[in-house]
Length: 163
Image (cartoon, rainbow, N blue to C red; front, side):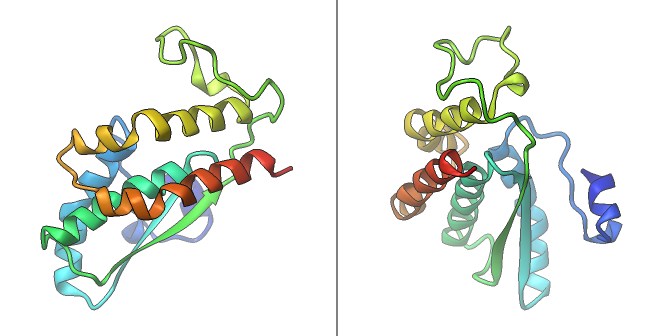
């Protein structure tokens, strides 16, 4: 990722890459202390979330939830904004539109799934696990969940329909 950003002209000082988090919730939470410090020093702080196209709706939902919770707890100010840049995944579209029954078994390589399978997986995570999963990290997200839920699901559905 760093190499791609550098090739696009982004200065090292502007990059914050988290390569230690085990999931997107941890990415967002690890960013908070930095954003908290920056928002106290600047009038406006823009976070640019860059991830793959199929992951963006759920990733944005997570980041928006974490930021909303931090605002409610007065960790960060309202001067923090989130921008989104979706990168094409390059995944093959073909291969069916449903996930294998036991998609979470360790022997399955999610990186070999088609775009349709990844999008089905994203939708299933949103429907079955997302809000409780975020809350397990002590992030209070009911406002974001109710305001953004339909939009996230529409974005995933739109990606399924895109050519």
